[in-house]
Image 1 (cartoon, rainbow, N blue to C red):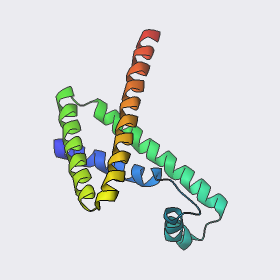
Image 2: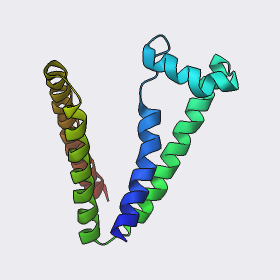
Image 3: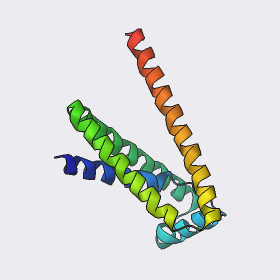
Length: 137
């Protein structure tokens, strides 16, 4: 069951990450992505914008469905899943870092510190919001 839930969570998260990547129309990443799916479909700028909007809504819907099922899990299963995801994230981080030269590793480490700070800030905000919502009820 644990592996199935982890696979479900990861399957739901991967499209989220792909869609959440910034789209830079003039930059290399946006250019490559536009030449992928959008070039084959020959979409106008307005169609691309609407396409992204709909994909974002779909991602949000999948996230909400996943959250509903995860909320039904016993706390021990949630914790085990969280630990397994964190372990996989740490292993991926290590493998990615090993591909980089020392200068790139330094920049990568800085980026990771910023991301950790953002995660901690978001966790603090969510805890504050939950407490506020609890007091309102």
